[in-house]
Amino acid sequence: MIDIVKTYNVSHETYKKLKSYEALVLEWNSKFNLISKSTEATVWERHIVDSLQLIKHISAKDKILLDLGSGAGFPGVVLAVACQELYPELKINLVESIGKKVTFLQTVNEELSLKMDIHQIRIENLNIEKVDIITSRALASLPKLLEYAKPFCKKETKLILPKGENWSLENMEAQKSWSYKYEVYNSDTSDVGKILRISDLRRKL
Image (cartoon, rainbow, N blue to C red; front, side, top):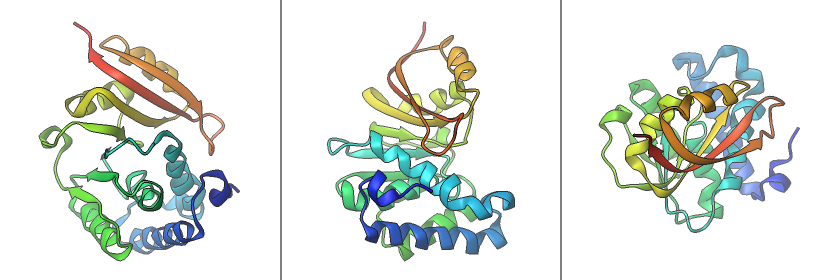
């Protein structure tokens, strides 16, 4: 079990707030099927800590984060909780089109006293300024993710994307249509998972 206080430099207060979020996920899951029932027993490690590890790729110079397809809030809510203390100036935007999930996210936002901007809209229809960081977890394959992300990217935008064991194949496929710089990091919670850090995203002619 990962000690998040030591590993990710978060306070005991942040830990308690994340545990409160875990409780909300489990409470609402009985009615709204936010996550697979089979992962309820491992929600802390599989969903929360797996999301929290992305904090290592955020810095004080980042001002706007966009989480695409937020679902139950992984990683967007987890990062909002951690950044409330570590990077309080960071503005966090969550994008989710499904009404019941948006209702859950709004409840979390209020009960945990967060300041997330929650957009109930399809990603293709979202209209906001360019951002510093884009995250997304378990939404789509890498080629599709890059298509979703491009309208919100400037040259310096970082895409921080957790990926599974097929990340290399997805990366090869994406490079047929896209040019970008990338780094690959091992996941803290999965032996086969990786974190892709992408920047300088450009469409190939």
